[in-house]
Amino acid sequence: MKLTVNLGENSYPIYIENGILADAGSYISRIFTGKQIMVISDDHVFPLYGQQLLDSLKDYECHSLVLPHGEPTKSFETLPRIYAALLDARLTRSDLVIALGGGVIGDLAGFAAASYLRGVRLVQIPTSLLAQVDSSVGGKVAVDLPQGKNLVGAFYHPKLVLIDPLVLESLPPHFISDGMGEVIKYGCIKDAELFRTLCSRRSFEDLRPELPSVIARCVDIKRAVVEADQFDTGERMLLNFGHTLAHTIEQHYCYERESHGEAVGIGMYQITKMSEDKGLTEPGCAEQIRRALDIYGLPSASGISVSALTEAISLDKKNLNGHLNVVLLHKIGDSYVYPTDVSFFGSAGEI
Image (cartoon, rainbow, N blue to C red):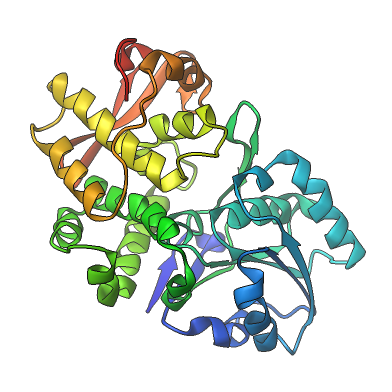
């Protein structure tokens, strides 16, 4: 299946197909006429899929950089190591960076590509469910600071995204659940039918036969949102449903307890409970979200006091001049941006 993100000169194709990784070279040749490629990956993904990718790129001079897996790698301190590798390989602005990995590698390699020599071509080959349905599409690249996630970043679109659902078969169950947090999000914000499909299954294994079409639906929703709002000033904010709380939960535990998708699940459920209590969301939505989280092994609570999170929320990049835009649901499949401030979250209780 082919989708195209139509952004004028920044347009790019997305291919979703079982087994496409083995044929990556032929797709890359359509958008790249240079000679050198740097593959940036991590020590979980590269041993599994690095050689398969390199075998498909035999017409090019390829280099590879393998970084430690995990969120701590997505830090400002990692960038000099990437820049040094690019310089040692003598990559020029006519060359290419391929991000082979999950969201951490996609964001990190993407930011390095955006900033090295003021920009070299980028291809995203996401290998986690979360990256396939969300972070590899849309052009957001970033690194984390100690004060919070994604506080240094850019909008930098890839030239191509290749999504191979078969690589998910090697993922531990934890990473599948992680990605399902974002899949559920898409159903919540834009597609009640997708949400019903997810809730009609007993588990991820029950959903697996439909995975290419589920991934395609999520990517297509993101494609449409990004086309309407490339720089995240309006409708694209809807993609942040659950994320205001999620980012602060992740930060509270130094990215070592809840994964991103788990934190998003908690954030979606807890903010929907709050908005239902305020009469801003149709009653029963939070319970529907909780049932969906249960099916795919995702938590709905973190046990953190709300007051412990409000300081981090005040530093969130979505908090502008004391005004905070939170994403709420009218009902499942129908979302909106609600202007407020940190007082929305109150100060008592746990989430």
